[in-house]
Image (cartoon, rainbow, N blue to C red):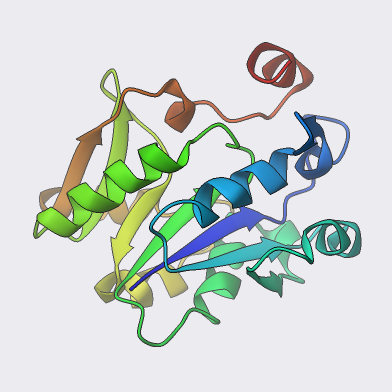
Length: 192
């Protein structure tokens, strides 16, 4: 079983507005990121909310996801990872950390990463595009304790760095894994 934790608690400071709910086609950036996970072979999707949580929760309440509030979101991404880990299914054997501001990572890319992870004995799977590492990243459940120890505004990068021999790099043909939407220019160039 594989659980996905979708990190969507941030304040969107560089964007200047709540990017999670910005339009993308007939939906929003966050709803598209959720749909991509739901249409993949992920077994469980957890969405971590924080900033303007009520608005976001109202928008995604109809999705078959677990929603968890991170009251400490201002203390950085690590707190959202921990909030998500605290409610993953106890049967979960791996955790995928996905970013709410990467709505263009398609289900087939997610599935390619999951398939590669399942076929190898490495404990961490990282997608790459033209040699650059991106997201989402899969961690074997054996890394749960280390993930729970994270502090500040870092994701799993520190754990990946600390265990280079246990990292599987998975080349993908999509630039989406290295492109997140942080600014108005990002939004204009990637979405519109």
